[in-house]
Image (cartoon, rainbow, N blue to C red; front, side, top):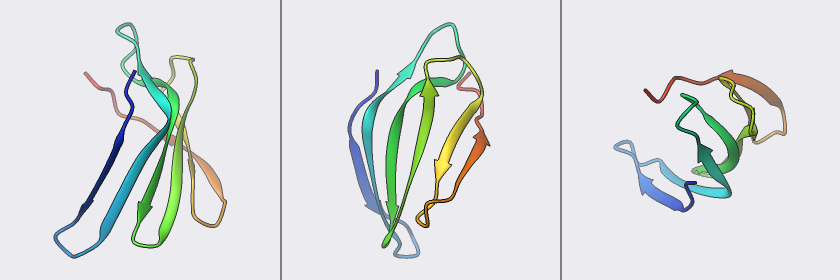
Length: 78
């Protein structure tokens, strides 16, 4: 499981904060994160990524600042 926070500033002056709100889970038998959620704020805009319910699949749900949600395809970790 992965937990924690991160923050910083990009080379163009954009600030970001990331907070894992539900521990990210990576199984050895699956090339993707299978569970957990992270909130990401860039400047004043916040969104989130939800990696699912523990199922080994290559999809996560992204939520934009306006509340719209869509499914994204993840890259393998190995």
